[in-house]
Length: 333
Image (cartoon, rainbow, N blue to C red; front, side, top):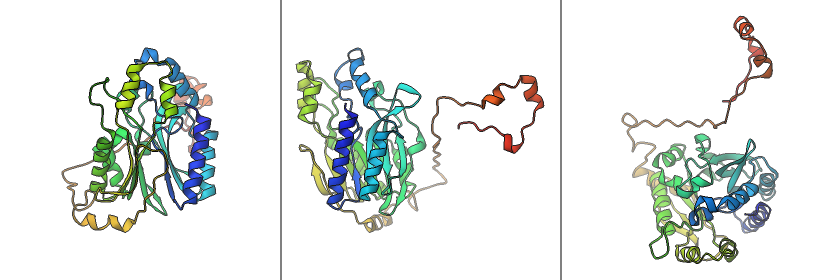
């Protein structure tokens, strides 16, 4: 819950990864300013202060924090995928669970807002839209990304596969508590691996499963009130893992779960070709005469506004006035 500190941490990790030869640096879900685990532990009426902290430390897509990440990507000549809690310029309380892909020139290639906040995330983030369901064609491959539970949505995954995706990024939290102490909690490792592996196998794309890390500092912050039941939940819930997958869904490269750090893998995009011979779900292994998918990628806006000059004209004048093409008043779509 500290945007300044998490931005500085991101800058340091980008520098370290680039110095070790990385070309694509991927951060987990809501890395800035952190994942709202508190929403799983306590009822909403106990979480007002946590939400205020979340809102105060969420960042704008065009704010100084994002500009610093963009500058680092350009300085080191790397691509950066970053999960962050996004603030809205028009509402202090509207937040989105977002992901951004930044090019090696520092420009934003794609900005995605999670379509549907999952389970208790609905108490923190607003639903996103289809604007970010895009694959970026870069010098290192065609890159797409989905956030956490979106990887459970076969239509969202297919929308990326249908754009020739070669590298699929899935961003995850460090932990996903779902039950009280004594009951089996959600198994992050198995669930994430099944979903990401399924996508790599179906799309014939490399996968980057990037999960956060639950540090002692985070635990201390969450448990400073002395809630022993919450402590037991956090201590017994499985931790997520960071892994890499090849186009068959097999694990390659480094794996991290119980340690914080950087994991590395090497992708040879030619390995995406041979599996397409078996079943290409966006090519010959489909029936376009049977299935039809339409995707709305318009960015949602809270309102549409017309020009002040036009609104000041009387109803009678409006009916009698014809605007030339040069005078046409644009509206927000």
